[in-house]
Image: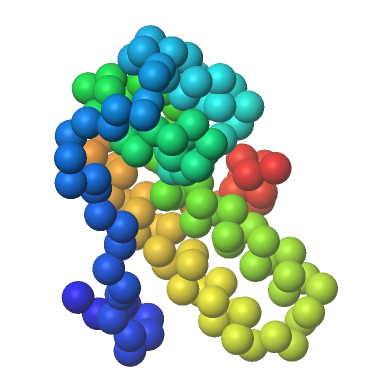
Length: 150
């Protein structure tokens, strides 16, 4: 499917490992869960944790060993953030764009980017309200977003 605000199509993403075993991993599932929690307490989000485990520990897939995803492990131990990660990342991007526009008032391209980003935030919020992950009265406010992100 084509991208929403550009005329390009997306690149294909990474693929899961073909085999459902990784003989080089010598960690027990409990040790992998402990690693996930350690990185979550340091403030890493679940995609970052997956990349760290893949690159530094050679773990191709946490789910392969623990039968649970990184987000599920974090939710079990109350280490998952209140806001969904994609919404948090969009809020962070909007806050950074506002800061940039405060310094560079004539940057029309960034102004357009801010409008697009904020519309994505509102669309995501609408989706998460319908799913019940956000309270029904949650509303995007740039000042509150700045406090949430910083």
